[in-house]
Amino acid sequence: MTAQYLVLAVLTLLSTVPSTFVSARELRNPHPETVRVARYLTVRSGALALAAVVALVFVSPGWLLALAVIMALVQAADAVLAVLGRLKPVMVLGPIVAAVALVAAIAWLLSNGAQL
Image 1: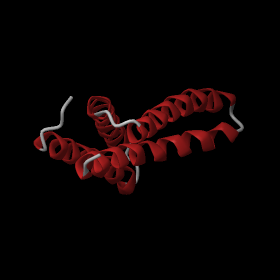
Image 2: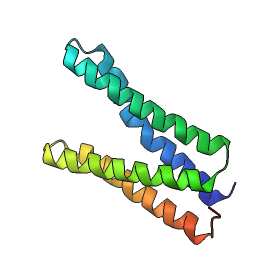
Image 3: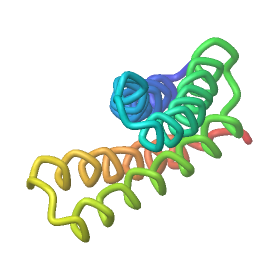
């Protein structure tokens, strides 16, 4: 496992954490519709987190690259939604930083000649 691979794998895993915890927290919401949506989001986020753990345990550059691209797109979409929803700047900045960090780490891994 190269340093580039490890950095990308850790960034990918870390990018799944906020949405997993936020959605899981909403499972206790008293509104049934919110809980219904939170269940869906928790399963989606949990699956992405599990996939990121798999990339750390079983070294597979192709798997990691696919997952990292997906997470970069998810983070970029979260940033757009935060802007459209006029949320606090930190709610916009976090996903933007995560997306940029993931793209940079992807480029770093690919520049190292990762075998897919």
